[in-house]
Each structure stands twice: as C-alpha cells, then as structure tokens.
Length: 316
Image 1 (tube, helix red, strand yellow):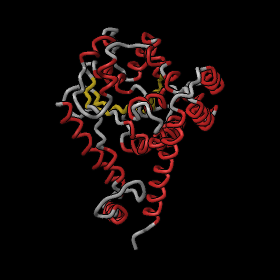
Image 2 (image 1 turned 180 degrees about the vertical axis):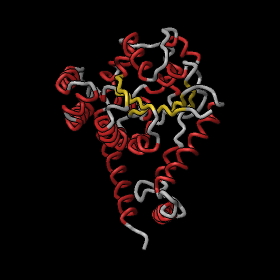
Image 3 (image 1 turned 45 degrees about the horizontal axis):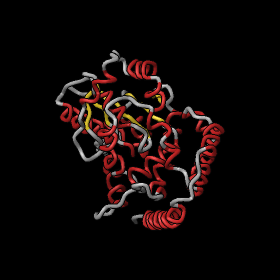
Image 4 (image 1 turned 135 degrees about the vertical axis):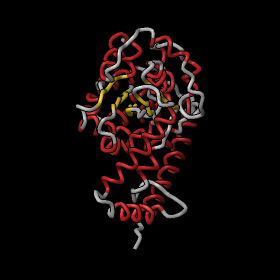
C-alpha cells in the first residue's frame, strides 16, 4: 500500500515535534522522527548547496545529462525519485495508514521541489512567534549562549522559502500557528484534521503522550518535557532575550522579516516589537553575548564565503 505524503514544514524549534506526535496518534497517519531522505535526492541535480568527495558539480551535470536521454527527460527522473521515496515511506510505515508524515525542518530548502514532485501531497506549514524560535535555539542548541548566528540559514532562508511557498501554493497547503494549537486546541486541531480529510477525536490531544518516536533526530527535550498541550512555552522567550544585544538583534530580525511577511505568518510586527521592548532587561551575559555573537557571525560568514568560492567553479 502506498502512503500519501504529508509534509510538516516549519523553521526549526517551532514545536513541530509536538504537532508530529499529535498527528501520529491518529490511526491513519504513520511517521518516523526526521527522515531527511528527500534532501540528497533533490540536491543530486543541483550545482549549489552541497559538497561531495566525488565532485558535486560534475555529478549534478552528469545526472542531468543522463536524465535528458529519457523519453520525457527530467520528468521521468522526477517520477523515479518520487516512486523511490514513496516506497521508502511504505516500508517505514509497514504499509498501514493513509498518510506518511515526513517532518524534516530543513525541507524549507526544497519546498518548491516537494510541491513539484508530489502533486497529491498534503502540506502543513507551521508558524511560531519568531522570538520564541530564536529563544528556543539559544536555550536548546546554544545551551543558553548567544550563538544564534550559526543558524542564520534557517532563520533567514527558512522564512524566505516558507513564506514564498505559502504565497504561491495557498490552495494546496494549510498554515497554522503553534500558539493557536496550544491555546485554542478545539478550534485549531479540528481545522487541521479537516484539511487532511480525517476525523478528529478530542482524545488525540491527550493520547499523543504515548507516541514515542525513539530516535536521536527530532526534539528529545520537548518530547520529555511536554506530555500535554501547554501555553507555558509561548512567553519563555522573554526570559532568554533579556540582554540589550539580544533584544536589539531580535528587533532587527523582526524588521527584516517585515510587516507583510509577518502578517502572512499570522503575526503583527508592531505588537511583537512592543512586547519585545516591554520585556525585562538584564546586563548579565552581555559581554559573553558580544564575544560569542561576533565569533558566530565571523565563523558563518567564513563558511559561506568558502562555499561561494567552491560553487563558482564549474565543470568544463
């Protein structure tokens, strides 16, 4: 039995593991922690964005040239990639369920390819307050230290990609805010399941605690800490983003996202900035923030410069 793909797309630290567990509590949805399987398949034909010992540029050129020999060219290659991935989903699910849920945060890098490769897929785009995302990255991956620059690609490119995808494919996707799922569960969750054409049972909002994804990928902290829907994480960013540097960086980040994109995501720019400016201020960790923030920025900039130099080279 071939499962219909269900893609849960979001920025990292958006609460996607919680959403995945609730969805997986339904009998018609199978899942696995974070497959990542489509990233190398899509990048196999890209000149940019990947490095391989055997030579990514030459390999991508060769695969595209190889695909051109098929009766329908690249369309035939896409069909084989699609069938391969669907077969993997079927094996992972044991052939049961209507949907296989693939929750891989960095699929924002290939979101347009997902819509092309899987025209029958269901796509859920999960938004979360950007301030909460920054805070969660600092607390979880940075262990409280201001190293947010290391995830600049997710924070900036991810917004670009997901907003553009929702704008272009609004008729094929369902957008939902994390805050609504935890604060208004009897409204937001039924709407999500209705988009999937699946029945909603309120018991799913408690039975999900028995869903143990049992893997290193995903969000082990959230799985351990939250066994019920809770609004507790909604305002935790106010404790993390307290130093002047963190508050200014966050304000700049909100302004970069901009009023229009935030509105599409379901947030109001002025209100977020007002809440940020009203949050308590502390000078503690400020020196550490400056040092670590500068190092993180230089480190990431150096990597990007090296990658750009590599990708400028083209095979003869």
